Image 1 (cartoon, rainbow, N blue to C red):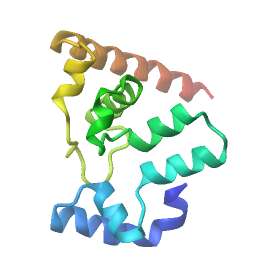
Image 2 (cartoon, rainbow, N blue to C red):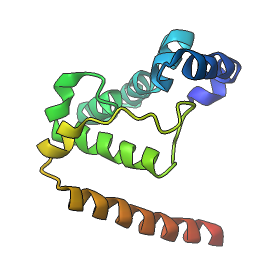
Image 3 (cartoon, rainbow, N blue to C red):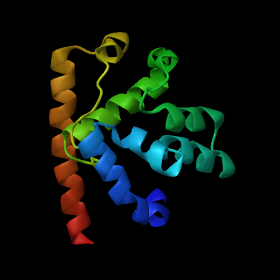
Image 4 (tube, rainbow, N blue to C red):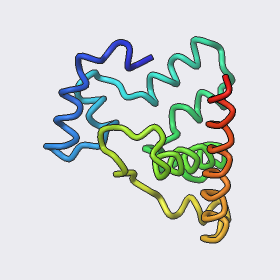
Length: 135
C-alpha cells in the first residue's frame, strides 16, 4: 500500500539510504513521516486484526528492544531477516539488516537449526515459484 502512495518519495528515501547511511525504515520515517511497520499496524487495526497481530506487524523489525523477548514478534522478525538474506523484500538498503543475535538465543535456535531453516525455506520457495508458474 505504501508504494502506491509514496512513489514520488522513493528517490529521496534512496538518497538518504545510499548517501547518508540511513536504514530504509529510518529514511521512510524521515521523508514521509511514518515507516511501513507503523503503517501496517495502523491498517491492521482498522481492519480489526487481533491485537496480537497488530503488535507483531508494528514491531517486526524489533526497533523496540522490549519486544525481543516476545516469542511471536521474535519469530516474525527472524522470518523477515531470512527473507532479506534470501533477497526477498529487500529495500534500498540492500542486505543491511540489523540482526539481533540474542533473538536466536532467546528462541533456543542453534546455528545448525538456523542453517536448516534457511535451507528448507529455499527449497520450499522453489516449490511455491513452480506452482505459481503453473497459474
